Image 1: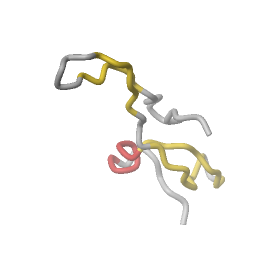
Image 2: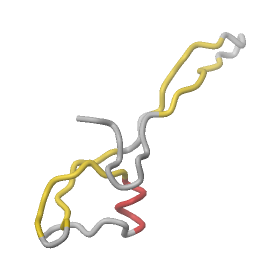
Image 3: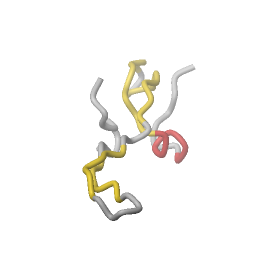
Image 4: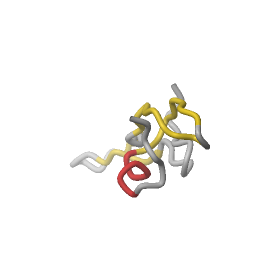
Length: 63
């Protein structure tokens, strides 16, 4: 499963984890992607959507 929202394109972000001794190591932040059933132009299909798009109503969920 791809870690990318099909609506807004939000995906994985990367940066540095900084310890107390100021050692920098690479880390990643995964977007909160959920596999949900949506109405897509009259038909029902599964899509990978981030929770921000679900909460804001950019996607209509299928019942």
